[in-house]
Picture 1 (cartoon, rainbow over the protein chains, first blue to last red):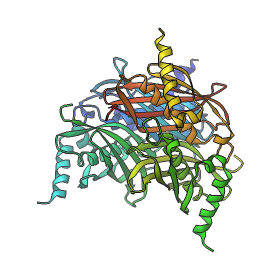
Picture 2: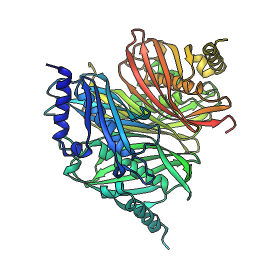
Picture 3: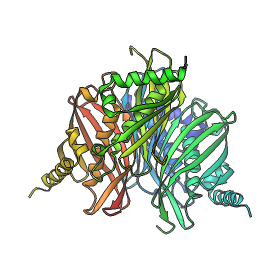
Picture 4: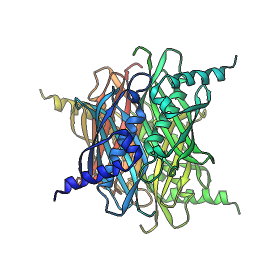
Length: 140
Length: 140
Length: 140
Length: 140
């Protein structure tokens, strides 16, 4: 049994169960413990007034990629809560395919740190993000 | 002629012209140069898997409130581009009414700084944000 | 007995006991639970190559002001650990008197949030900061 | 003539000319355009009250490593000004050798982005940082 496929399959189930995530049309392209790569197609409906993809959409992608990367690196029965997130917007982003790769940089018993990079179809870096997560019990 | 009403009316026109902003259902509740207050109703479609409003939605609100606050404080013919944004999530956010207040903290000729606070109907602080903006010519 | 004077006196004792803090020459100008105001004299030795006060010095001031503000707002027997800090540098800072005011924005049982503002002798805002703190037992 | 040695030599000259930098005892261990690695020995004088290296010291190291990385990647006659910096403190840091590696992630004509990682003698990651820099003329 392939553990990597398990991790990706579990994430796909999670995303499908969430109306917010499902409406974004996110694809889990790869997932191993601590690293998750998501695919997303930015369309005209995600544009700001300048015709570029809105920063809030990029923030959403980065938060999901980082959160899922943390989720795949913590024990069963624990969950993550976003405490803080920072985003740097490196380039203007036109509608099109975006890949968001989240990486768990350090996972402690109470606090986890993650980073994310967003790239376009030409693998140009569009944005970088970092985030802090509180690790709590499912019932907390 | 009331300048404050003018500022708010201009922002309403801008938001109405943007499919992304219009689809969010944002209301410009108040706008004076350097301060913009937006109303938003978080619904079940904005929930994450834990039933709380997704952090990406809050990031989007904060970015728009800060960006419009900067926009109202720069000269005509100039526009703002988000360089960087940091968000602190202070409380779990249930669906319901959210007010996002953006404030331009400092506006230079090239760089502007803004902050935002998000509150619920009981005026409890839900999130705080800060952001950096590049000020460029319309044609840049 | 004046509680506010007690809080300030306790902070002064703490700072005096720390070689790092004592060497900075910080003054506790005011302290109430959740808000701490520190005075600092930036001298020529704190300058970068452009003759301005180094950003690392401002970061140090902001971190101390925020951390002490959190410290005054948590129960005895608990301590704070900095998880994350963001700084926005609003103006170039010449050597001279700087006041750093830290405010605890929200203090939970596990996580606290604080903000700080640095001003010069003319009360111009020089920098703004925000930070996240983990609240742990003294023995943790 | 070795360009890489030139870059490192120029940075060493810059650091030696700054009282603030010289007093820190920083060593330029490696420098190529866009990447700078600094060595630093944290001693007992850099400790906070818990006996750990103060976050402000780590912030200073990260800011210098990122700023120099940007400096090595911009044209002669241009200089960098720190706009914003975010730090994540991943582990408690005991006094000892610290290496700070700054990397210019993207350098535009007006704005540059950099990141830094701080590691100890065992190459454990102690802190991560990201920063935004304004690129201006020497006379600006």
